[in-house]
Length: 342
Image (cartoon, rainbow, N blue to C red; front, side):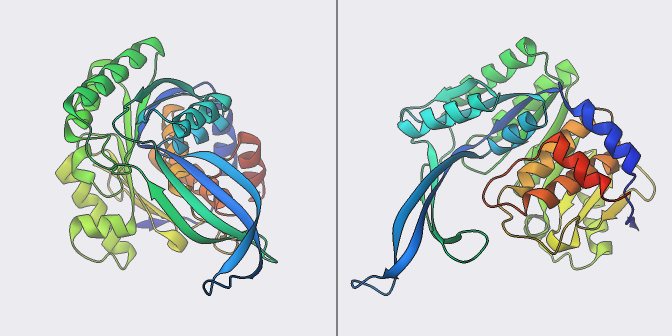
C-alpha cells in the first residue's frame, strides 16, 4: 500500500468548479433527523436525570438523503429517490430537500410505514456544541413490498432519462429500500445508459457487485470479511479481495483517525492510504460518511481518478466533523481548506 501526505493543491482546486452542474440520482433510505435542544437547569425530582428547558427544534434530512444534500451544496443537480410515510415528517423531508435544491419528484409515499425519524435529545451547556443525551428512533426497517420495489425501479428509470443523469449513488442504511432486486435493477439501468454506479454499503458489499465505487467503514469491512483489519497491509489485502470477488472498480474504506484507504482494481500498487485531514477538531462524526460518498462520486463524474476523488472527499469529511449534526460543505469552503495546504 502506498501512502501520501501531500495534497496536490492545484489539482484539487481545479476540480472544484467541475463538481457544479453534475447530474446524479441518489437512491437511499430517507430519514428525518430531529434535534430537540434544551439547557440543563436542574435535576429532576422524579429521577436522577437533568431537566432541560426547551430552546430549539432543528430538523434536517438524514440517512440516505444526506448525500443529496451534500451534492446540492456543491452545486450539483441531485434527484432523490426514496420511500417516506404519509405523515408530517415526510412533508418536512420534502420541504427541506426541495429548499436545498434537490428534486423530490422521486420520493414515494407508502402509507403503511412511517417516515423513519431519529429524534435526538441534546443539552446545551458550557461546551462548544450541545451534548446528546438520548435518541429515539421511529420507523420500519422491513423490506419494501414487491409493488413498492417496482415503483422505486420505475422512478429510477424515469429520472435517468428525464434528468439526463450521469450517475446513481446508492446510500444503503439497511432500512428496507435497497433490496437485492432493486440493486440488480440499478445495475441494469446503469449498464444500459452507461452510468457511473457508486454505493455507501453499510457493509452489505455483496449487493453491489459490478459497481464502479463502493464505500464502507473499517468495522463494516471487518464484519463482512469476518476478520480484523489492524494494519494498512490488512486493509490493502481486504480491498483486493473485495474488488476481485465482487468485480468492483474502486473500494474505499474510511478508517476514522487513520484516514481513508482506496483500492483500484487491476492497478499495480493500486491501494493508497490517505491520512485523515483533521484529527484534532472532531466534534461530531454524524454524516461524515455521507459527505465522503457524495464528494467522491461527484469528483469521479467530473473526471478525477479514484485516488484524487478520495483525497477531495477526505478534505470534505475533515470539515464536516468539526460541525454539529448532519452538515454539508460548499465549494468555497473546500477551496479555502485546500488552500491552507499551499
